[in-house]
Length: 370
Image (cartoon, rainbow, N blue to C red; front, side, top):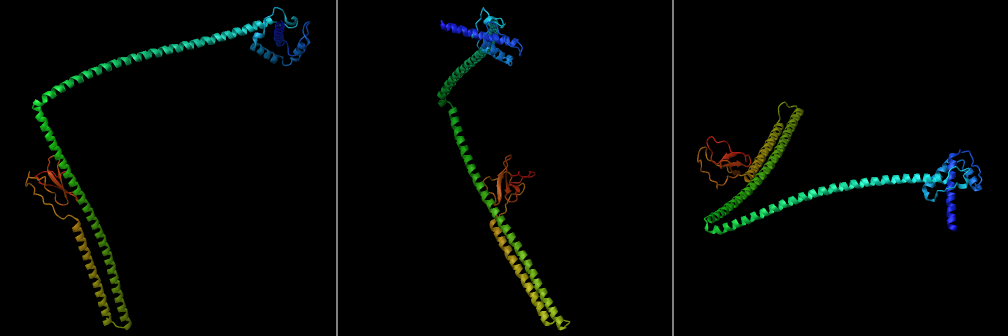
């Protein structure tokens, strides 16, 4: 029994605190709670001590009430006499019921929104399932078509295999067998001719490469000879200049010597000096001419040894038409080619690029470029 009484007393105290909060909220900030007949002194002093922050503490007490509404019990009798406290536990109970109704309404609204979202998700899932069913149906139709095509292909292959077996049985006794063998023999001969032509072309290309190398070496020799000739000419010019200077110096010296002696005509010594200078100049010129001749002979020998010097001989225009010899060798320094349009043979010079028909024809255009 003691525990139930303590719980009931605690509930009365909390209800009285909430009633006091309502009274303080309705009263002015400067007013004091009057002492009633049954009002305890500690509650009166607590109410008088809350008069400055009355409204703030009233809001705190209301928040506490909202947080723990289960501790409030509706009472049929006034709390602490009710003479001074105008708010009773019935008012608190009504406010608590209002709070609970608001919470229930909010809960119902939230549940309704969740149900709507669930229904939307179910509708989307149904649409996805319907689309998947359509896709599966189309795939099944395609698979059926592919199976039918494979069956037709297998049937066709069986027919072709049967026809091939029948043809293979009839082929050994038919004349087409001999035609096939003849075709194979001709193909082998044609392959051999192509291989021989490739070998000849390879030899011709090697020969052309060697001739091109010989021409390049001859050009290098000719360039070196030209450089040496230029150096010899420069040296000859310097020698002629030096000889002329020596001769002029000797003549000037002879004239000066004659002038100093007071002679009007050239003395024998002056004439001998002039003669000696002329002989020196002539000897220098003769030596330069000999050196130039020797250099030219060396250059001519080197060029003749490095360059093909056999001139090609072609038939005159209009002679020997239709008598071309495909196996004839091209002259040195020339390349034998064939016109793709007419098959006529012509030659191209490797150094100058000049072209010439092997058998010239009257009124024929010049050979095509290589």
